[in-house]
Length: 250
Ligand code: 13P
Image (cartoon, rainbow, N blue to C red; front, side, top):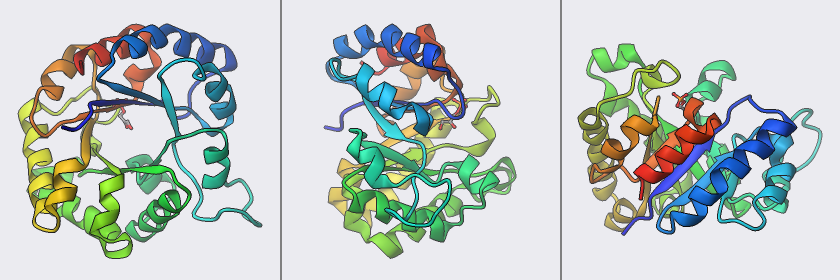
C-alpha cells in the first residue's frame, strides 16, 4: 500500500523564529502519526535550520525548486547536490507558480525532474489545469500533456521513484478547494492513464492533492482511493491547521 504523505510547501514565507516555532509545533503530531510521512519544503535559505530542527524527529524536508545544473556560473541558483548535502529527501518541480512566474516550460520541468533524480532526491512533480482549461473540459488533456513531457524525457519507470501532486491552479491560494469527488476523478484518471504504460508505476506512485487543503477538508480528501496525501500551502504555515491535516491522513 502507498504511504500517506503530507507535505507543506511554505513558499516564500518564514523567519528564523517562525521556522523554529512551526517545526516545534508540528513535531509531536508528525512523530505520533506513525503511518504518515510528514514533509516540509522551506525556502532554500532555511534548509540548514530545518535540517537541524528535524534531526531528532520524523519530519523530512525538501526543496521548493532546484537548478538543472549541479555547479557553475549560474547566479542565484541552488544545486540539487547542495540540498542533498543538507539531508533533503525531496524537491518540488513544476509548481504552477514556477510555470507561471518563472516561465518554466514542460521542457524545463522535465530537465529539472531528471536532475533531481540524478542527484538522489525524489521529485514531486506538480501538474494541474487552470480554471479556463477546466471550464473547457481540458483537464485530462492538460495533466496528460504535463506528465507526458516528463515521461518522454525520463522514461515511464522513472515515475516509480517520484511523487505526483495534482494541484488545480484555480484552487491554489484561492480558498476554493476541489471537492473530494472532483479531485478523486482526476487522480483516478491519472492512475489509469499511467497504468496503460506501467502497472507497477501506477500502483506505486503517490498522487497528492494540492489546492486550499485545510484541516477541515483533509480527512474526506485523503479518504478517496486515489488520493495519497496532500501538498499544502497556506495551511502548512499554521501549526493547528497542519497538525489537523496530519491527523486527517492517519
Ligand atoms: P494553498 O494550500 O495555499 O492553496 O497552496 C497549495 C499549493 O500550491 C501547494 O504547493
